[in-house]
Image (cartoon, rainbow, N blue to C red):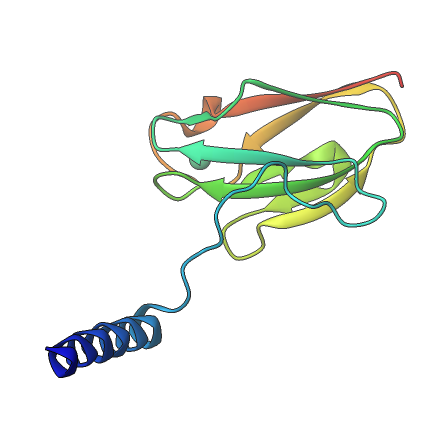
Length: 130
Ligand SMILES: [Cu+2]
């Protein structure tokens, strides 16, 4: 009886070890807000979809804030330009850090010709007074 249990336990452990090797460690569970690097106020996730929209129509931040812009594609292949802020992101270069130094409204545009809705694939980044 005990031998059988040992065998079962060893088998389970072996299967787990093999699947860990095969699939890597599971991602750590999402526990509350992400830890921010020093000096960074927030992470702004800009996610593009194949219906030619972003996850939000408007993104906001305040003057003086330092924000990590994190771009990703939910579907399709897009990228973003925020010309006036000199920001250019895509799947190979998905992240940058910006400190906003003046109020204003900036256009976030898709920068990869992605199809019919490309020309109107926009969102806004609105920077308000601190
Ligand atoms: Cu596009």
